[in-house]
Image 1 (tube, rainbow, N blue to C red):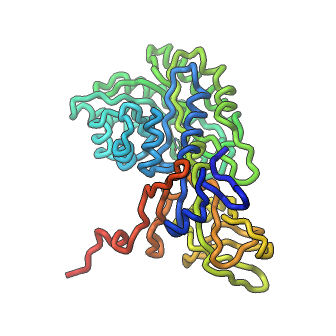
Image 2: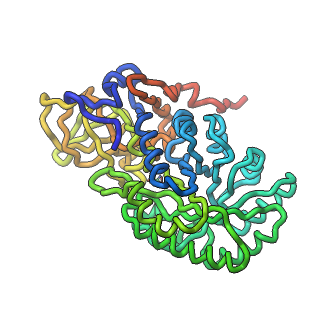
Image 3: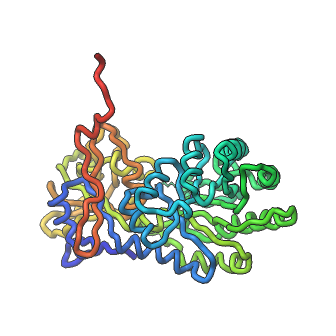
Length: 415
Ligand code: LLP
């Protein structure tokens, strides 16, 4: 459920008509709903109630400072994958002591930054990372708290680009070698073992891969205990899907109910790293129809948002729902490819969509709050979109639209 709904034929973000927001702030424009973000965070928090737990929002889904601040105020932890994401969390008022650091290529500088900040845990993804972490921590006179991110080799049955828990994916440490790595880590002066983590993919629509992965991870936890290596937490990753089209996503409560029989008696703190399920439905991308053109084969609606603003359709052939912001009976229903101005045939937001629209109409791409703005670029020298956060009847600009000066900042002409 989200707080974007049609009232009297007009799409509203909480209590504000989207057309009014677009008039004031221009397009393309990302519009977020604070109430939706809060609702989704709480759904995870409540689903795990009664267990010692921490919901670590995956910052990569939407890293706007105001989004992070909203979640930090609710007590959220954060899953980061770079020094930049860590600095965002700290700038937004997040607690470093609730941060887990995932990712297969942490640099020494990023490790130093995270050790200095005192993050809760590094999710280590390789032997070389373990060695770098140990050496860096010892140089700094610290101990790095770690979990290994193990790769349980289960098929998440999602798009190949967002499936991460199979042997042929680059992520995590093989479950077979993890045991030996834990043993090595236990002997390192710069390392303190505190947990175990796994994350098998994104946009999962079925609980069974989560359960299969958990079984394999728990078997390893037992083998470690037999070696005298005891853990404090188990991080079950993120990956819950959302509804873009006709998907039937798993609700956080349903997911937790399925997992809890395996978790309740472990005596471990449970961490989870949801991104999309918190931010996805909390955002839309608003765009204006610049013009309509066609030939005998196709009719195109050319809009002012493009693949640089929202890459998912281009990169994953993702189907995202596109709706007119104001329902109108003036235009005839026609089939359109909704395309952006970028000079690439892959620059489309939707194909073969039935829409009743005309030039200057506003369209909203729904469920664009996750992996929307964070994957935006300046391709074709297009300034990135503005972002606003709606809170009841208030609209806050949480990122100004980029200017030409922003685009060339840091560039220099030759002498
Ligand atoms: N934890 C780790 C270690 C991850 O790699 C990810 C996502 C998450 C948590 C959060 O997963 P979520 O709950 O959002 O599914 N750009 C793609 C999605 C890439 C996901 C990458 N990792 C898309 O637009 O579909």
